[in-house]
Length: 536
Image (cartoon, rainbow, N blue to C red):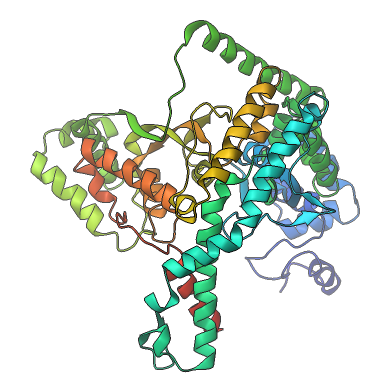
């Protein structure tokens, strides 16, 4: 017999996926009630559906009341992770979107791609970049607007010529496509109209991606983009405090807009982002920043490096770290024995046998999605990186690591893609970059953070990354796949080579690093996508 009456079951089925099974989804419309139910669940021996009937059904404010008590009175922040919201943010710059995506825990992001979407469209006669309010009040406002407009003009007018160059240089007839009979054939050998159209879609998508990849270096950081964010209440509350604490007006305004929209769904979870508690946190964040600035000014000197850097600067002795990794591998299967005692015994294992253990772990991986065990987190690596800002945007998506970055400037020089040279647009490209440098330096004197907005994606950007071997495997294997951007593929390959040089045994676990070079990077990926589409 069911725990609930017929009438209760009828009510419950509006709020839960079922009323009589042990596993069910919570579908009650109000997000605050979903989170409160989950949290209340841990504080009673009642079933969740019984809690809902007894405590929530007759009190529409029960969810808010619960969180007010738990969050504000008890300070139990973890319950705020039970409230989830999805928001879309449109028309924010590449400066602001990186600040949002700096948050590592509690969020998932999907950002508008510079590879698949072009930025040549105008809105009401204007290119899509931010007229930054602080800069607009300075005497450099016109120069800033002119610099950004020039970038977009050169970018836009060269899309079609760049596409033409790529397609002439690398004809569709150089590639094979799967025909009706399942055999791979050159484009010229295919007779079926549907296969021809499908093949053209694959080729056109791959060549367009390559063209836009080559030209994205021209785009300024003020370029407006879109991002979708899914996150829990605790993560959103911290993000809002960070944006409120920012010195950039754009990020302050975003904080106000995001909070307004979150108040419609998870208000109780983000209430403290700008109240007395939030303001104390904001003050702390700015104090930490100011303190670090003071230390840097008094203790650090040097000149900015020019060009790309991918240098391994911190790592442990391989023999030492292999002992730790192997000890962690066998820890779970050594019941009752401490890690310390396991480590002592592993140290005595002959080097050849230890190498065999690592090679066996590598052999068990059949594809790159077979991630190494957490034992490989015992090995850590720190890299100094200077890459163009466009490439940084790709590496920045990896969040299971430590990443610290500096302000975006023109001090480290810029990259000119080979395709730009091949097209013969070096003069225009250099004009954009030199003009940016001039305007940047004028703005930077009084407004260093705002000056970032004028800097192009092609300018080099310094940051450091510290990661364990497990994350290094994931990042380097992913960023060397054939369909990846050639810029970050080269850097990821150098990172692999650096690790391999210092840890030749341990690096065997990095089994699916692709060291090859490809002319049309996206071709095979677009081909697989089209095949999946055709099977539907």
